[in-house]
Amino acid sequence: MSDWYYATASGQRLGPLPGTELRALAARGAVGPQTLVWREGEAGWRPLQEFAAELELSSLPPPLPAASTPSAPRPSGLSGCAIAALIGVAGLFVVAVLGVLAAIAIPAYQDYTLRAQASAAISQAQVLQPRVTAFLAANGHCPTNDDAGFGAPASHARGALAEVTFGEFEGSDLCGLEATLATPGKPALDGHKIWLEYNATRASWTCSSDIEDKHLPAFCRG
Image (cartoon, rainbow, N blue to C red; front, side, top):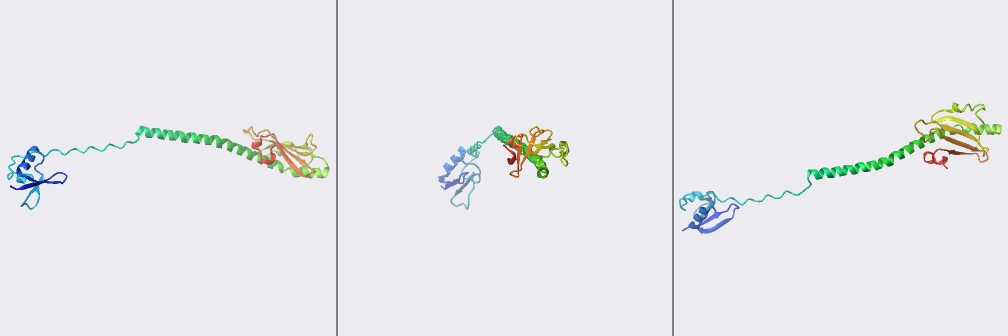
């Protein structure tokens, strides 16, 4: 009696075993018609059904179903709602940061703009300083708007200046000018005064104002 070998679905070759045992495996469905078998004298492996007569296999039951491989569990991850929530939180954080930056940047920019306008007005008024020093040197007293070449206060209106008044400052006896600003819509500057005083002894000018220091150039604060 020949010894038989058979191949499993995974390719493992089992045997030797007698034909009666192989027939019993076929009866139980452990092997099926397409199961490859071999015995001595065969050139190669052949399906079991080709040896049905030799092994007295009247009928071959279908092979037992292969054990199903459990599907790998899906990797846990964030659900769509969780991702949306994270994006929402991140968006709120960005909005909050932008809000803080805006709260800092906007007032700073407004202060810068007002300071630039105040500086421009002071520069316009300083253009008139040589007239004051020349008049004082020639006449020995401070000029007023009634003196030739100085004109009415409103005649000096241009840019951010509404008017300029010339004269002697009370309490200091110093010559100089008072410039009134015209900046509609900007109450921090509009209608406020800039004073430029000339000290003949020191041959120097001093700037002061009733505008807040943060809106003035450094040389005119205090």
